[in-house]
Length: 324
Image (cartoon, rainbow, N blue to C red; front, side, top):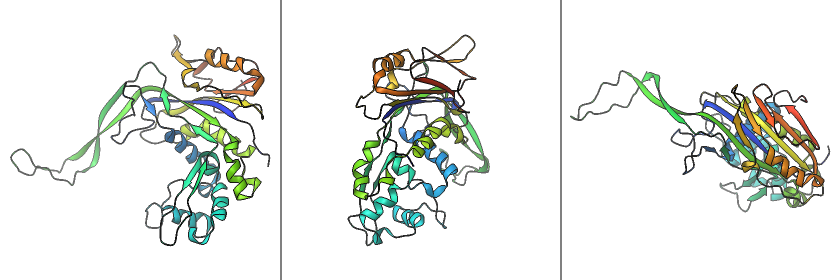
């Protein structure tokens, strides 16, 4: 296995058509105080983890909800025992560190390992993950949220009283409500810094726990396909649309700006999405001597890219991964 030592900056665009990519606890698409629709970093991370779970197996992850025999979620010590076949209280911190850092979600995103329970003391471990993902901001010009009523096939068991204090008939099916965004294009900025793991890998005493090329390949594949792969009633219509991957030279200390404000998005006369990379092209041109490679992935059947950088740049179809 080859160590991955390069820092990376990039962004992901997730399109959402008549869908709800990331609801708040009231079921509404999340909005900033000014009305701009956004999604938390957790929405994209969950899609990535779910994709990895299905291609690498459930026990390739530590921080992912799983149920025990009673259909209740594991607590952290129980999850640790289920995955590693050993007790938290039986392992010292070095053994725990080596175990959890061997899981790809911890190796990518880091973790706060803080188990609680009888016989567990001073086993807390904090790992600063190499992959940092920002909240996704809807960069489409409109933020139109609509709600619609839905009907359950079952009667509501909770009887209500009318204004006269009499119980109302509850034999009718209960009604609910769902909210969706008419159209959105969420842009998540992200960065990868393998050096974030240097200290904990040194403490673990195992160089194989560093970020590997294989881990990066899985991450990139998940960033291209994870949201589309995760389908549900509320997220139907939410798909991966675009990925920009800017890989710096191995010893570069350059810090590229957040791409959230650098990517433009509109539609042409035919209704095809147009992603404008003019500002990104300028940033890359100004730092070209610090950059090893630029990769652009997009849905070629529904997206046009304009003002794309050309130096050290390759374009690929988002779904197939084939060069364009």
